[in-house]
Length: 230
Ligand code: Z5A
Image (cartoon, rainbow, N blue to C red; front, top):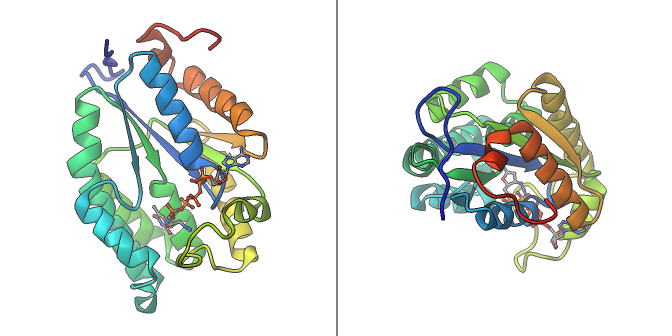
């Protein structure tokens, strides 16, 4: 059985939950865990990621993560992340939300604020790009998985056959500055964001993520039969 969720605004729509944090924080791992849990409860769920999620946005992802736009500068990279996001929102996220689906997205606008923001792109430009790309579709909940940069990088070290991508290879100080920028967003937008200590083992982190979803989006729990032990 599949349960749709009623919007607090009246129309039927799903929920957008975004996962943010540094490399190796465990976003993919935790999205898979949460998707399994929601699916087991009969909640319709889709997993997606940024940059990417649609064929066009995945094409932009390949260019960006290979460093193909690096020489144009961080502002140009921000434009490309926003272009990919606009396609992703238009073609995948907004239709899924209209359909009553829970959308779990690996990175979203906070990653642009953090990565391109700490690289020096002015906040007003990032805010303008965000407005254009989102067209009013904003996250209902953002889970920020927090680990020291060294811990996250150690987890992903040696993973990619082709070596680190465009951002993984940056100096550890930049990774740590991004961590602090994510935490600053969480403090500034506490109504939307929940910080989860992601240094614990994956099961403990999954439980903390679930508590955040259940507390912040109680209609999710109410929309379906709870699983045993939840
Ligand atoms: N970027 C940007 O600059 N601007 C933007 O607007 C957007 C993105 C949207 C996308 O990279 C890059 O684009 C990203 C920012 C930039 N920078 N980089 N690099 P990506 O999507 O390829 O990579 P990522 O988002 O950083 O994901 P990741 O490195 O795969 O990390 P993760 O998804 O958070 O972790 P994971 O894959 O779940 O786990 C990594 C490993 O740790 C794996 O072996 C797990 O088994 C292990 N793991 C997971 N959880 C645990 C716990 N709790 N304990 C121990 N080990 C664990």
